[in-house]
Amino acid sequence: MKIGELVGAGRTADVFALDDGRVLRRYRDGDDATDEVAVMAYLAEHDYPVPAVWPGPAAGDLVMQRLSGPTMVEALAGGAITAERAGEMLAELLRRLHAVPPRLTTDPDRRILHLDLHPENVVLTPQGPVVIDWATAGEGPPGLDSAMSALILAQAALTMPDVAAAARAVLASLLRHLDTIESDHLAVARSRRAANPTLSRAEIDSLAEAVALINRTTAP
Image (cartoon, rainbow, N blue to C red; front, side, top):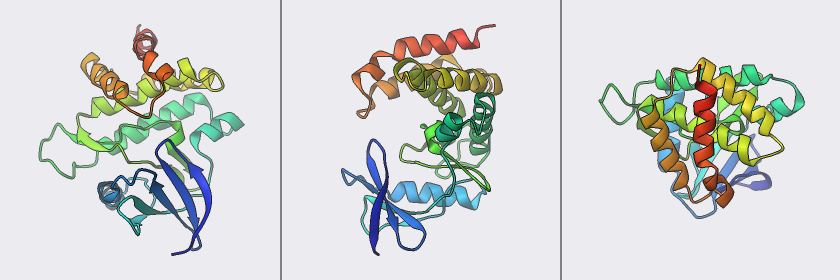
């Protein structure tokens, strides 16, 4: 396997081009990607839009289909998609995900959760939106997944000036197209975000205001 140029970098991993139209994603700290590969393969079997995926050469690696198209963030910035449509699309992707039977549990109230579904993790390919970055995936109540997406957008609206207006508009659209976010799910989402070691101090400090923004946006 010939590893090519760096084509992307996130908070915890780097993405390198491969010479066969695929990419290698490598965790910097060597975190095991085995479960992530299994979740993505399972979702693909159930026709959920994820990249094709294969185990990488090491535990911290995974090999993925290289996608063509902008991320939802890039499409918003370029005017290729409206904030209203972006929020509606995120809600659709959450509903589709939560319609897939759980992989590990027989509890009918639990589903596969992405827990980091936001515009940077959606690629708008010619075939439709594809969801990437399943590192945080787990199983639990669908409402928690919706709360996490809303909270991430609210934090972006408060801590990222370059995208703040777009994040607020996408958040408003998402909340219009979702079922009501329960306060207990939002509380768990806040705790999970506060414990996330990749967040900045400003992002963690914004959590109380982010919850308030969500509550204001959903108020009649």
